[in-house]
Image: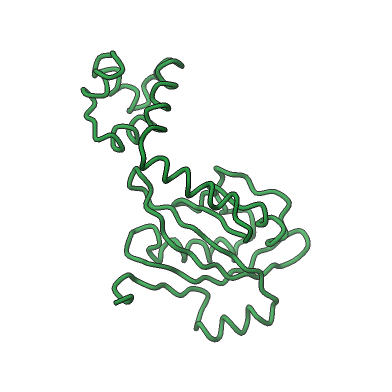
Length: 194
């Protein structure tokens, strides 16, 4: 939180320390994880983050996904679920997905391999405008097939998140799409957009 606050506000450790009325070594210690600011200072830093227009855009991106009428998720590198629409659990036949947790290890080995290939494609590097991915996951009720349309979102701290809109497919639709795409992943670099 402290590093993101400094980056979003364009502050040095010393400048942040002056705003918080602490010494610079305290800020340095907090960033290294060698201590924590008081609850009062954490609230103050949170308020500073909320006042930043860029952070409001990050919050808006999460809210857009959360309130969406179609199944969509917002992921960060490591396939960590930041947000999802209320339609996602039903669309992928999963009762509960936990925000803040990685998708790895939740849907079988094949799904993990597909997600790993998707991450390796460069969606979080800033090089890709979009990916289309085909996924087969294992659920308690059997395999579920879906297509993801994935676009990057650069958040205020410079981290790249990925907005993933998903659509459930039948097994036949999945196999047909797999043949048409020539594989489970199609990456579209910004360079190809013209």
